[in-house]
Length: 130
Image (cartoon, rainbow, N blue to C red; front, side, top):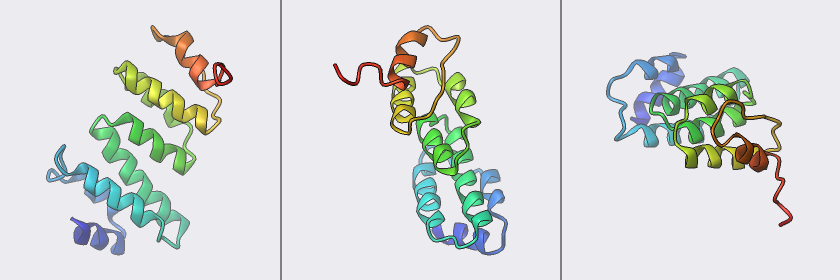
């Protein structure tokens, strides 16, 4: 897997990794971790972004919204936040995502959710001093 990713990066075809059927729920974590760690060694900003976008897409494809949010924030892609929050159906994962947004001091308001008030309190760090 690592050699295949290295080769795709070398020939500027990393987007092809998203088309592979061999990346499934059993090995996507390993592939994404390798992509994220490899991004640190990219000298070209376009290559850096491309590697992180591939990791983001793989996490998103596997419904790992928290990890996709981590990668999106690392890329500075705050436009992905509403999409990820709306697609996530697990209330605990949503809370975890809100804690991550609060840690990054991202201004985001959850709308149209059953736990809307609680999630917005988490993002706003309202109960931090309690």
